Image: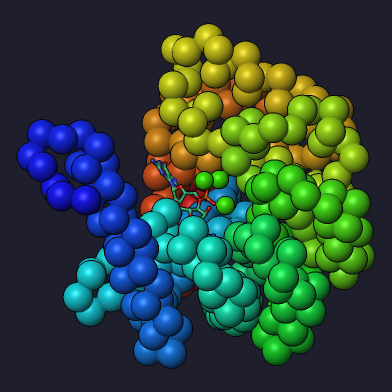
Length: 275
Ligand code: C2E
Ligand code: CA
Ligand code: CA
Ligand code: CA
């Protein structure tokens, strides 16, 4: 089709084409990323809201490409999922993060994001086992973070897989909670010991009444189900204050610390000042 200026349909097609080519470009580049050591991991502190002490960190993958520059995970994780590369990347993240956590000056919890694709095709149980064995990280120092997308298909199978992971002693956190389909009652069926309130609900605290209501109901039900609650994306003292008052035990966000190199995170842990 000819690209007539002002023709919105052909404009749409050419934009679509750009986007497809962009994804292909990212996919091609991603193939080299693991081999050429362009991926690295940053660690963002997770803090005890009562005491202010650091409990551990979430591992967040980063990609430094020689020409593309820093590629954000929002851009490449979905490409990696569609192409299946997330399985290799996810294994690498697990191994590297467990090894890094062994260097921490004190034994905090390490949280690692695991994609639904790893659950379906990646033999996630042996990937976790392998990472723990090689690093010698005690299983109870590891949490995996999963999103509700894991349960969209083959629910029973994945609950079974999760049970195997829990039986190893590894913790499971339900990430981005509140953004998906699941109801709070559904939560009781899942072998999950932590719930992470999505940052979109934290963002407009404390003013926004609707966010406050959601946060409060997640907290009261999760607490009744014996699950700990993590709030993510905390940027202001006011947000931390209302979340703490509402009973949220664990906080994560720029207020407490940005994602940072393991070296910097270790220094922070060593000083060990309440945040
Ligand atoms: P997520 O798991 O929900 O991670 C939280 C995101 O919020 C991170 O973005 C983090 O840098 C950002 N963040 C933390 N505190 C604040 C804050 O106070 N304010 C704001 N505005 N943002 C904050 P990031 O690092 O860009 O990661 C984006 C997403 O990419 C993650 O969302 C996660 O879904 C995915 N991801 C990252 N690493 C991995 C990985 O190793 N494996 C998989 N499967 N996914 C990953
Ligand atoms: Ca996460
Ligand atoms: Ca999240
Ligand atoms: Ca997210």
